[in-house]
Length: 292
Image (tube, rainbow, N blue to C red):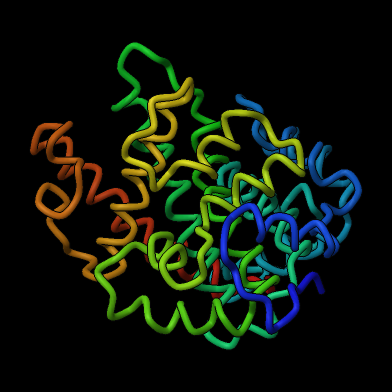
């Protein structure tokens, strides 16, 4: 538990960060950061992933539980990590394992309006969208595909930290968000005095995450960002728009409700929408099956 005192009033970001320093910052489990880095590498096979994940029995056990769930529905029980990785596929194993590596650092149990299933479903969808868009939007600055996927998956960790630190206050904001035209990040800034991106950037610094991931966590909701990793931030930012639109209407016209129509022609936008609509059901089922 890392909570700020219930009566704490946020008057500035500086004051808030000073108060956080008096709490215990969430700590990644031993080896988690190296695991996230290893999973972000390119051109891995399921056999490579097996060798990496053998060192993390808790994650391995949850992957085996997932592959034996009704969602995967194998004909015969799967009892080995190697067979689980083979059946689940590289992308599912990477994304779910990365999520599991960081999720245990936060206590979300006291925030009544927070749903781990909903959170990770959205994050997995943003990761999938970022991987789809990266080859289409990178322009002159090549975006590393595994980095795009990881950035999409971790972009919203600031919300987990807020849920942990300020469960009652964040629960109130989450309830307000369904009727607000503001993004959740902007609503947190308005109601709590601190945004998801503010605290996400703080956490990325404390965890010493790579600069590309830290910039995404700090700026995915910042349309004025012009830094070194602008292309990556743009990909994740547009992915957040897409996932938000699809969560409201799975048949949403992405040309009209996101920036995608300003960047890609109608045929490519349609192809992106179809791919992500198909992924939406699959990822939602995976997230609902997992014990986050």
